[in-house]
Image (cartoon, rainbow, N blue to C red):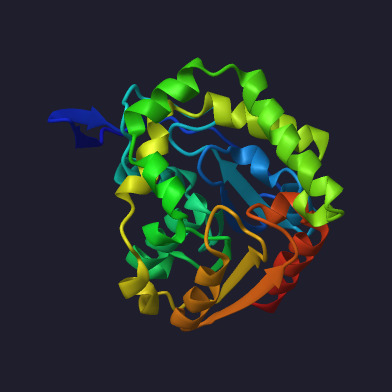
Length: 280
């Protein structure tokens, strides 16, 4: 694939390589899973085997600039680059049936954008704490993302153990509050720190380039399940119910948890997803 965009006045070639994994029978209904910003396909380690056990053919990718997918050298990634890379991956799979898309946060944005542009290519959607407009982010976080050069330097020069320490401290504080649905296992905390550190520094500019999808939501007519944690501190929790109301064929469900209920509350989350899949 040769696909170019403009980056600071110079052509930017979208890489064709994509790192992904798959589980489940080849003949199973295809499901594509898409992680959020500064994460990786390991976000779905709890859900993938359950989908496979239910005879779905599930695929999970690393988005451009994340995990083990290519990380082009650019200080300021754009949403359209990540989206084009994502679409190329979907096309390259050549799945025999119309796929179901499951996305978290930025991955939810990618799934929504694809469903808006290609509704005939999406059987159903599961959106988890989805990002669909910039003002979902707290003001402080928006200001942080407006400094991509500073963010790039911080990520590049901060040791991985520091990220792990910060995640451990946060997890410990939530654990002391006595809510297991807000805490993460040791394995997930370690993976989260690793994913954050290995994310391309320029990827932290992505939120600055998102297009507000609100005006296009009425075009998303396929069955949709929106799931969100009731104490999301990354995206405004009160932004998800209006999203459900704007989607013609959607239902919403609040879970006990924060921004990553698929990781902190996997038992409830996975059951809700499986029940929805059986209903479509």
